[in-house]
Length: 203
Image (cartoon, rainbow, N blue to C red):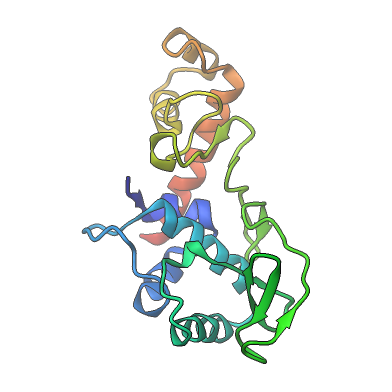
């Protein structure tokens, strides 16, 4: 499944401009297509980069990625956990963290943050919780390839949002999708509005 740029921006916190810039040297999308589409693994890696970028300069993130390449750590970036203390970038491996920037190879002790939790990006925009972009919208990699769905269902969030956008009140959605509550329909429409807003800012 491929994720379009606007949905990728909403789920990762990267701006559309950042996504275009980072395709040059930080992360090439796994899905080769026109228009650009990102894989679920790409989203996980991008979210990690955005979280790091909120605390350290992009040059340090690039240096960390280059150090990993120099060490022949060439799997997809989503396979690694990168963390920061606000000064350097660390690679978490098992129960240890290794400095990639200031003192490459130096092991340190760190507390590990959840990379999927909500956070504020460098531009001050609140970035949604990756697993729950809204209380009744969730992302499960095994469900629809990671496409956001109404919580507890296999119903894509944008299917419901487009019905609401087309004039069906959230309270009437249950007539068509019995497992989708009024609150879930409202959450799907609200998240879809954020994705559309990001699409408009990219244009």
